[in-house]
Image 1 (spheres, rainbow, N blue to C red):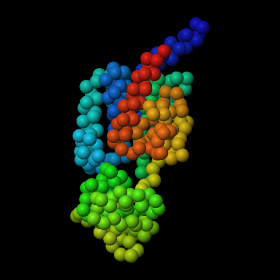
Image 2 (image 1 turned 30 degrees about the horizontal axis):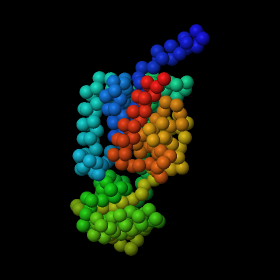
Image 3 (image 1 turned 90 degrees about the vertical axis):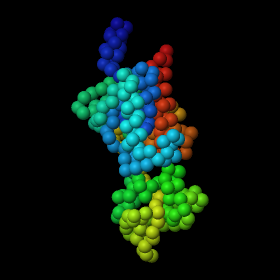
Image 4 (image 1 turned 180 degrees about the vertical axis):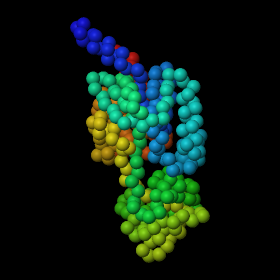
Amino acid sequence: MKSHDGRERKRKELIVYDAIIIGGGPAGLQAALTLGRMHRRTLLLDSGEYRNGTVRHAHNFLTNDGRDPAELRRIARAEIAAYDTVETTDAAVSDISADDGVVRVVADGREHRSTAVILATGVVDDLPPIPGLAAHWGDTVASCPFCHGHEFAGRPVAVINAGTHAEMVARMLEPVASEVHVVDPAAVREVNGLDDGLRLHLDSGPLDVAGAFIAPGWRPRGDLLDRLGVQRQDSGAVRTDPFGRTSVEGVYAVGDLAQADHLPGPMFSLAAAIAGGQLAAVAVVQSLVAP
């Protein structure tokens, strides 16, 4: 027993942080704020890569409708800085492992240890290979009608997609736009920006619209999930419980990256990401005091 107790003491001596958060978007920032308010020593690692990095105005977010996402991050980091137990570092993670109740994270050549890691790394969108489309992504080309539809009110829009998803988005936009054009991506040769919208060069001729909606493919950012071996949902998102716990002890996933079993898919929104970050942080704190 003495030998076992000695190993346990040594293991605890190696652990510096109560939690390590990987990702400085809304989910990770909220998790850091919640942990800071509970005086838990926390390391937030922010690679500076954000899914909404090209978005100038974030919408459908109570009290901040229309604010620049970069400004939201700046405000959040300033608030978190008031909590002495939270350390924020601008660095990408190069390696990660979880074993025997200890999570090891390597960033900028330094290894950090904790009993818990919250993955908030987000996802990367894969856009249709249409020339000119990517240049307008996050501005006049978007995916979410709840977040960007109102800005095109009273003007024509295009849904560049096919199948039932396109039909659903088109129906949702009918009360908002003056016209909704459903366009097969294969028929779009090029996209050009106009002063007040977009010009789609179709096989049948040009189509001018205020904005366009697409359903991009997406994938988790980086290879941390494969390194940890967490279970995935059919959607590709990390399988979690409602508090962000994954199939690997001490590993939590939040934000666009995560999907709880009771949900039909990952919930891509600022509000959902913030809620997920808070719940995972609560679960971490509870795990630290559990008998």
